[in-house]
Length: 220
Image (tube, rainbow, N blue to C red; front, side, top):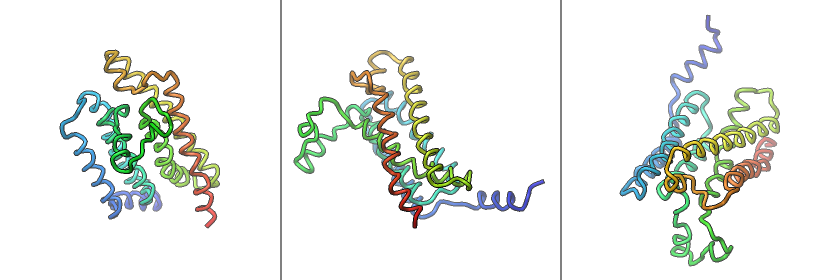
């Protein structure tokens, strides 16, 4: 027999619809996703990366329908997925960000920092921690209301760390099934034997850097 509280929760889930800002963010992501598939440069590898985009959007819709994320957390994830779409088109390692910045600002980060590799994949992993932590924090507090803000934030950071590890395992497993050339193009390791470690570290740092904002927001 269902309780009144359970019935109310089920009713809220059934009637919940996306807010205006969420609809705009989702529509923007879908437009960017479609645009990145115009004359794809590496169709097979982009398909592999884009499968995560589709899974991510479906998961976001399901989570928001069940727990109703706030606009900021939802839009942050949409922003991450949009940037991931751009990365997927150029397989991370080939995103011409240096040429773009030279054209727009007359500044070359590769020349300024002496970079020898394409670092767009590093940005993506860092943004994963930044963009997903607010939603994970919110879900932790909704699931366990008795948690203090520090405890909920710790769980959010741990979720980022664990999911980053699982992703690296998944990426490794997919690469094993591909030819050496396709595996290198998909993985984007660029000869760095510590690539997976650096990616997981940057995701963790991106998550941890939000703590001052989280603490300030909780104190208001």
